[in-house]
Image 1 (cartoon, rainbow, N blue to C red):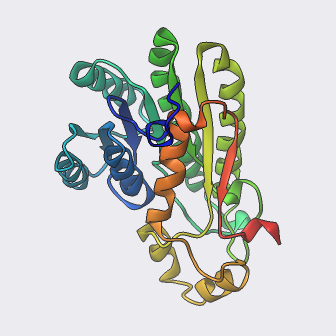
Image 2: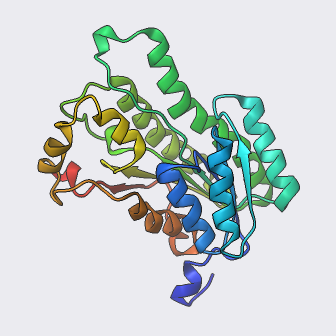
Length: 260
């Protein structure tokens, strides 16, 4: 266990996988882990964007690999793990950032939409945790960071998104369950629960309801949306030895939204 504060936050020699790592919060976390010294596998459905992020990380002086992965497909998740092990020989860190969002009234929601959001946001997280967790169990070492949302803790207003809220609440409970099961193997499992962030995903949703942004800001003590780069610190903290006694925790970064 490092005693120097700088060393506590260092990820030198570590290997990380970030799903959904090519854009939005995932991109910022991929870069953050690289800046802290980790070798990073950028896994995303958009291979071209993943390659750009991997190239940027390589410019930092650490190795990086871009992979096209659909986290809802068990076979592709397994291949992601295999290719990571082939390239780097181990997996120390997993960040599950792949996710989708949608606004839709529950009474009007087609079954397909419910299933799609749950499949990506919850089932995909489980499949990645399961596949990577098996490797971490062998080495008795690892840090898993699931990206949930404040929407897993409160019901957002005014938008209707029961499927999204349910999926993120599921990620929070999955995180706590895995933390309990895998603590004997020295594997830490935590989740970051962001609030409203200025990502492309949020921007796309706001195109139809542009007035929502002003309402969200009024409901947030800080009076603004979060900058995607603001997730870099929490991610490195949970990935590093600085959080060695932290597991099963929900790190909420929402500008204070959930305190009112």
